[in-house]
Amino acid sequence: MSRQEVGREQLQAIADEITRRRFLVSMGVGAASASLAACGVDRLVTPAEQARSARSAMPPSGSITVATLNSALATAPTTEVIWLQYAPYFVWYAVSSGTYNSSQGEFILRQGTSQMTVASLKAALVGVPTTAAVVLEPSPTFVALACNSAVDRGSNNFVLHTPSALPTNEPSGMTAQINTGITTVAPSQVTNGTWNTSNGGVSNTWTNFTTLNKAQGSDPTYISSAPSSGWQQKYDTTVPGGGNAVTFGTPFAAAGSGVLYLRSWVRFVNWDTVGRAGTGLTTSCPKLFEPRCGNSGENHVCGTYVSTNGDTYIYVALQGPGLTENYLRVDTPPFDDVSQLTPLAALHFAAGNYTQIEYILTQETTAGVSKDARIEYFVNGALAYDSATPGAGGGAYPAQGSFNMLESTSPKGWNYLLFNSTFGGAAANNGPARTMYYDIDQIYASVK
Image 1 (cartoon, helix red, strand yellow):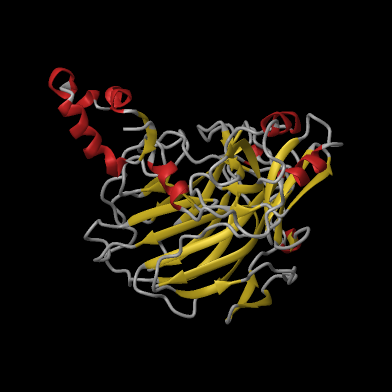
Image 2 (cartoon, rainbow, N blue to C red):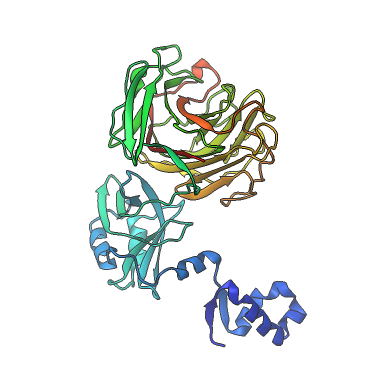
């Protein structure tokens, strides 16, 4: 039996060989991996590696070569950091490793939490054939994306581009209710003013409900077009803790029967990450949006914690007087007052760049009774949290347990998406220390 890498589907055959050699008799089943060498096998291939090896042996079309990458790196400062940018989005992601796959003729760059520099990338390219294709893999999905250009952008940024889009996780059978696409439509800056978006066959009328109230930091002009695309919400030092800059939203044409999918691109610019007295948190905690359902007392929130190190965690808070849990947080950072969940899905917002977030909110079968509601969310296409599955997305957290989203008198379905983006803080003197911005783009919602 020649030395080779094998997948788990071959483990039984290996175990048989080990049995014949009497290793299992003396060492037990748990020693199978330790005895692989005796069977001529170097190691087991992980499921992730199997997924990679199962894809086409051909690099994706349109990839640049290592020669082109080396040429682009030649004059770049060695301390610049490496980013991956998806088209057509204005968003960058950290590139953390680069390895050569000789069997497929690819130099593979992968996303991660750490970040390569130009110097480390040059070192990883030493000895790699110049004709090898440069391929991007967004961990943990392990799909091959073409790298079609490499550009020294200056300001400590060396950027690799792909024409591909991030994966999304919309359930099947959904009907779109909001679809702004990459929007350059300017929002209204007057109280009760409206504006329209239309994309992909979905049209929406948005309303700015903000009234001028400097005591609360509210101003209808504090929403505007964001740089490049999207809408920008402004928070200056007049916004008190618990105050919000603007309130706006749009109704759904159809409510569906209980499942809501939300996707958007968000970024925080110049955000104040200092913890606020009275919150019990070492973070600021801006809300993103409030999907409305059922009765008016149900005030559910999709929000964030922005920690002092700049990492941003997303959460869902279910609020309503008729709920079993009056204020249930289902979230990822270690700031949860219910289940003390541990960190797992830090969105690190690179300055001035968007990050994709997704939510799937599934109401209980029988409103206010059956306690089988479910919450899932995703960061850059990868699962970050599933309330029904302990540790889903890679975090060491428990399942949330049974809960309801609705009061027993509520109709099923979802009917409105409201933006009432309160800045965290329990007292008026806990407002922002400087002017900062929350930008949002490519807002999409669907129901079934």
